[in-house]
Amino acid sequence: MSQKKRNLIERLDSGPVICAEGFLFEIEKRGYMASGEFVPMVSLENPEALENLHRDFQHAGSDIVQAFTYNGHREKMRVIGKEELLEPLNRAALKIAKKVSTSPIGKEPNLMAGNISNTNIWKQGDKKPQLEVEKMFREMVGWAVDEGADILIGETFYYAEEAYTALKVMKETGLPSVITIAPYGENIMRDGVSILDTCKELEQRGGDVVGMNCHRGPNTMLPYLKEIRKKLKCHMAGLPITYRTTDEHPTFFNLPDNNGCSCHTPHETTFPTALDPMQCSRYEIGQFAKEAYSLGINYLGVCCGANPMLIRETAEAVGLMVPASKYKENMKNHYMFGKNKRIPQHIKDYRSKA
Ligand SMILES: [Zn+2]
Image 1 (tube, protein in one colour):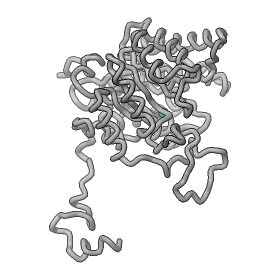
Image 2 (cartoon, helix red, strand yellow; image 1 turned 180 degrees about the vertical axis):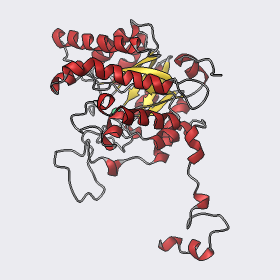
Image 3 (cartoon, protein in one colour; image 1 turned 60 degrees about the horizontal axis):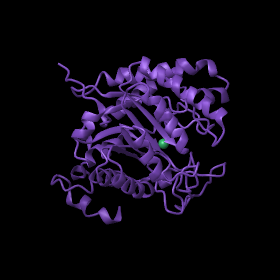
Image 4 (cartoon, helix red, strand yellow; image 1 turned 90 degrees about the vertical axis):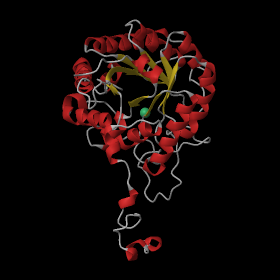
């Protein structure tokens, strides 16, 4: 018999909650999306590929099944000339997420999340695009509610006012809201509000979970999370990208490859197609999760660069056992580096020359 489904806040009150993000990069790597353009047509064109990724993240310990509607907003659909597919795309993505969330591996159902995000048409001081954005949020949130979302996630906002607008629209539904910001390399929101003040304001305006996601790796996100945690009383979220960002290059947009690159990308930046050499190891991701959790940040995950292994690492770093834990590393039985006594000594002895 399935267990009673606890709501997001009940779960966060009792411990860590894991959320896999980063669908854009991972679906692209799996061959179902054009990089750069980044439109989540996968829910319509290859629904089984999207369901598989959700299942892989679920197996790796994601408690939340986030509908892949990132960039699936009216403006992006206009850019690619497929506005008529907007609602079918959203509903298909939400239905897939709902299906996965209601068939969990353990007893307790997962939470299905509707998702809105940065629209890239928001303009400071210009009412027209701002109203347009609000309308785009409202239609997507409406479809999410229709399709049975348990929570709503607004993410990757780099304008404070756009985040406030997203939160306002999400709160109209009465569902628990997660709202996370993604400031660029100037370390301030594009409308001039500080990262800390934006988060304080989001809490004041009723965000249930407030924090940061995307754009920044653990190194350049954690210092802000620390500062924010000291000032906020609500639950907090931290979902970095999985790349080694630095003080000089706080986000992945202009991250240089200083790792012996012998063939440069055909465009200006390593973003988004040649970031691989700057990928964090699983231990770095685990360390981030552990540190963030020790600060009292209970909503954890990873964004761009995520894969199931890194989600498992995040979950295990905060003390959880997940279905994929069955396959956590076991070097003991490695044919050369293992300590297992069946491994021949002459093979073990060769390790430093391997
Ligand atoms: Zn991301």
